[in-house]
Each structure stands twice: as C-alpha cells, then as structure tokens.
Amino acid sequence: MKFIDYNTENAAYWDQVYVDAFPETERFAMNFLLNQQATHSNIHLSIIERDDEYVGICLHVGIDTGKAFILYLAIDAKMRGKNVGSEVLQHLKKMYPNGYILESEQTGLDAANEEQRVKRVQFYERNGLMDSRYLSHNQSGSFHVMRSNDQVTMEDYLTGISDLGIESAVDNRLLI
Image (cartoon, rainbow, N blue to C red; front, side, top):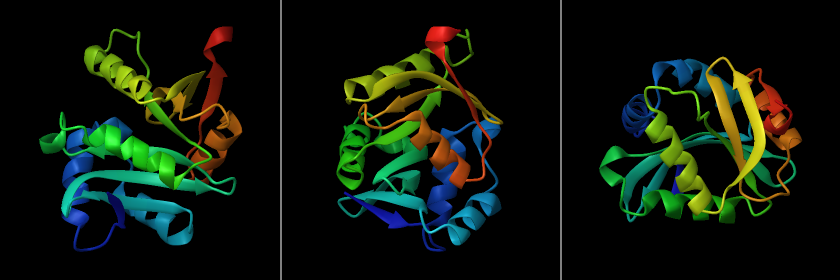
C-alpha cells in the first residue's frame, strides 16, 4: 500500500471518490485544497494505491510532532468490504507512528444517515481509534474527534486544522 501525490493524471479519480464519499456541505472547493497543498509542504492530497490499483483518497496534514491530522479519508465504493479501510488505517499508523487524529460525523442527532455515522465510528473503534470525548465544530458541521493513540492531543487537532486554514471550535462532551 502506498500514498501517491495528487496530480493531473489521477485528478479525475480523486474528484470521483471525493464527490461520492462526502456530502457537498463537507467538501471544500478543490482550488482551495490545491492552493493549501501548494503553499504548505505539510499538506498532502493523496491517492491510496494497493497492488497497483487505486483504492481511495486521503488529505493528511503532517504536524511537527510526527503526528497527523486527517481531514479526508475515503475508500472507493467498489473497494469497501474488502478490508481496505482497515489496511489504510494500519498504514497511517506506520506513516505517523506518533499518532493521527481525524473527524467522524457526530452521532445521536437523528440524522438521515445516522446508521452510517454510527457504523463509521464503530469501524474506527474496531481498528483501534479512540474517541477523544471532544466534538469539533466548523463550517462543515459537528464531528467526533477520534485519535489513534492517547498521545495525540486536541492541540494537535487544532494545529492541523489551522494549517489548512479552517476555523474550528472544540468542546469536551463530558462537560456538555
């Protein structure tokens, strides 16, 4: 498994998976994402490849501490149910041994896709991610903040999302 830089040859694949996987309210304009990548060496738009086949996309932000914030992670719909997502999460642990942090849509809101949201959180937990007990709030919505280990902090999350130029507020769900 490897992560390949976004380029003109794989742009159509990125766009297709991006649009299929994320609702419009959670997507940023591609020119914004590409500009952020062009001006920040720690921001990476990647195509995920396994056995010479594209299997998904990832936007990850390296943090100086050897950690990462994952803004987007999506497995191609044709590849779901084939253990690819679990393999990708394990690969990310190798890429970022000090840990990574990501968002998953808030559950418990009776959303139209509530079952999908719950299954996504359960998938992350089965693969070793932990609920930080924080919610993030940004222009895309409210999200559970999940992390690969307890060394990854909310400061890491705020650093990563800030590097992307996205404003976000967080609150501790234990206090709400």
